[in-house]
Structure formats: structure tokens, C-alpha cells
Image (cartoon, rainbow, N blue to C red; front, side, top):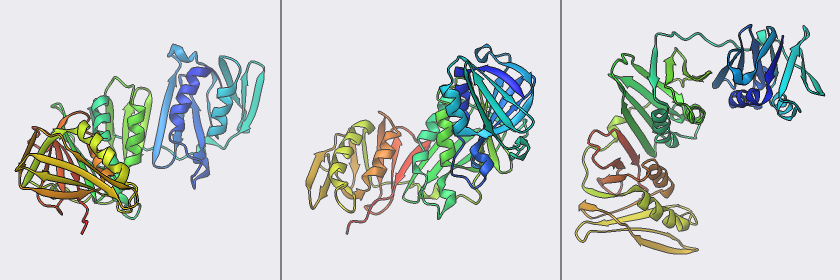
Amino acid sequence: MKFTINRSAFIEQLNNVLRAISSKTTIPILTGLKMVVSKDDITLTGSNADITLESKISIVDDKYALKIDEPGAIVLPARFFNEIIKKLPNDDVTITVANNFEAQITSGPAEFKINGPDANNYPPLPEVAAEQTIELAPDMLREVISQTVFAVSNQENRPILTGIHVTLADNLLTLVATDSHRLAQRKVELSDGNDQSYDVVLPGKSLVELSRMISDEKDDVKLQIAENLALFSFGNTHFYSRLLDGNYPETSRLIPTTSDTQIELQADQFLSSIERASLLSHESRNNVVKLSLNPDDGQAQISGDSPDVGFVEESVVNSKLSGKPLEISFNPDYMKDALRSFGKATIMMAFTSPLRPFTLVPSGDEDNNFVQLITPVRTR
């Protein structure tokens, strides 16, 4: 194997693939970067068993200045190889691999030799049927991930809750995440012509990484689902994620359909109030903030206290307050995550009782296309 490539462009692709490679793995070969060189391109592959990234560098793409002298394949220690490439002196680098799986890396006066295992021992990627494809706008995909992924569980005792439940039926894409204390649900109507139907659970960590990688994409992301994995294709990259095994709990029944108290306010303004109140609540052991609503005089107040530090109380600016008087306590960190997902939108918060979950939705959203749900905290 032998090729020469522009070093800066090569580093860009190496950094992408390295996102999927971890030094903490029970499969030693997965600490390595797989390189397969054909007469037309180079395929870089990195994996941590949960995520696999595959990136192609084509000989026809001028920015890589790629010259292929001899095809071949090798796996090289990923982090070490990347550090070498970054510190080479010249604009281009030549990599040559002999029959003994020793890679010679040269750039100007610098020369390195590193060993790697046989690429044939690297776990193969599965085939995914091309006809099972839907196309998703990258900005929409980033948005729905950011509006739900923070609600996944970090506890491994219920692995299914560490993922996002993704369903597609009748052109309606739905993402749901819950850690049993809060829930985030987002629905998006896709364009006509998507006759696919999916019901899968994707790891939250996989979708966070995917969201970062498509931040600069302009073209649609293509999604394909196989028996135990999802494939997202964009640019010259294939992003594989395993699916979580098991049945996701039925969550639609958790969202209240009626309420006794409602308040309408600006999400960003209320977020600022919660952040101030949580300065004191974080100093107490229970980390609780209380919201007091009195529709009779139109007053709403947020308060927080710490026995050792002090007390804070603040009036909540609102445009509408109706229903029954209510006092309810909640974890301010859950509330901050939920409010950030709405940006500067006007939202409606709806309550049924001090001990029942309450909802936050954009004002005017009658179809529950975007719902945040929070379980209150019992304080007595």
C-alpha cells in the first residue's frame, strides 16, 4: 500500500473518524484506525462498538491532492497515528505499508515507522438495504435531537431509557426521551413520499455525536434502518449506530390532556428567574425551587432557599394566568433544560395538582408536537 495526500485535508478526515474511537474498549483492534486504499479512494473507519464512522477520500477531490500508487489495507494505533500526522513538517505526507504490516510515514525530512494489525481482523460493517431510506434536513435533525436528548437517563440499570425512542409512521417523525422524572417529546411532519415506518431506540450518546457532525451539512441526511443498527449518510461520511434492545415504555399516556392551572410566559425570561433561584437551591440538600401561582390577583412567584445561605423570591412576568391557585415544587435543573429547548418562544405551562406531572408547550401548539414534561418534588 502506498499513497500521498495533503496533510491538512487528511487531518480533517482523521479527526472526524477519531470521534468514534475510544482507548477504553475490550476489543483491542478497535483502538485502531482502519485504512483501506483502493485505486480510486481511501476509506477510513473508526469504531467503539456503539458508533462506527466511515469516511471516504476520493482521488477526484482536488483538496486532498491524493495520489495512489498501490492499494492495500492496514489498522494503525489511532491516537498515535493522528498525533504523528499533525506534527509532520511538510504540506503533504506519504504512507507506505510493507507486507509485514509496518507503516512508513514520511513528510519532508521526517520519517516514522509504526506497526499495525492485519486489517482482515477488523470487525466487518453490515450491509444496509439502500431502498429503505428516508431523507432528513440536517438543521431539523439537529433541532429535534437537541430538544429531546437531554432527557435521556444516565443510569445503566434501565438501559432502554439511555436512548431516544424514534418512530416514523404516516410521514410523522416522533422522538421521545425520558429518565422517568421528566420527558421530552418532539413530532415533525415529513414531506409526502416517505412510506417507511420505523420503531427503534437509538442511544442518546450516538445522537449527540451525530448532531455535532452534521452541524455544517447543507444537504439532506439519509437514514437507513437495519435489524440492529441505524445508518446516517451525509457528505462523504457513513455514521453507524447500534440500536438498543428492548421495548421502550408507553409514554403517550403520561402526558396530561387536561389542566386546572395555566400560565403563559417567555421561556428565556423564566429561565433567567430559575437560574437566579437555583443559586440558593443548589446550596441545599434537596435542590428544590417552588412556583406559587395565584390567578385571582394575577401574581406568580418563584422562590428558593437554603437553610445555611438564605432565601430568594422573585415575581414571574407572565402574559396569562388562569385556573386555580397552586403551589408546586420541582428540580430547577430539569426546568432549565426544558426551558432552554424552547429558546425565546412564548410557552404555556399547564398544571393539574401539586403532585402530578406538568407540561410545557409552545403557545398555540394544540397537537402536542413539542412537549416537555416534569415530575414535581414532594416537599412535605
